Length: 141
Image 1 (cartoon, rainbow, N blue to C red):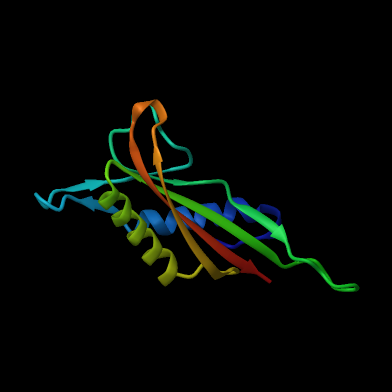
Image 2: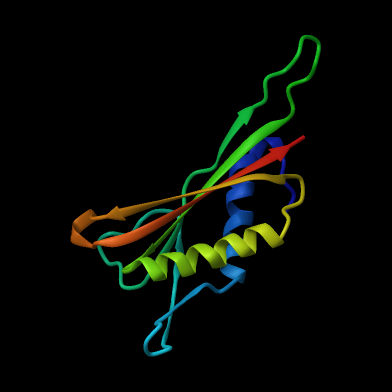
């Protein structure tokens, strides 16, 4: 997909989702070896969550600080991907798969310049999911 300034955030969101879905992320049970597929969503599904979830939050794009007489075309783009599973190992497995996919594949028109992670426990609607969050920073010149 071509990333344009007029549809920047939606283009980046779609490209990120395409890369994650193409990785076919799964959780493997460390005891039985059984695997569970994952839903890749635009919002957390706390009502009927029957499987682990990867949620891509809305993409943000900030203008870089410009110098006098310079143009303002460069943008810092931030994408947050939240990986939800019933246990910490599952959250780690999803996180590792998403991170590998997004680190090893490029998106035309933007460059990955920073990666950060975080962990949380989610109790929405008593779902008790573990969440590991991946924050990706991209630069667009």
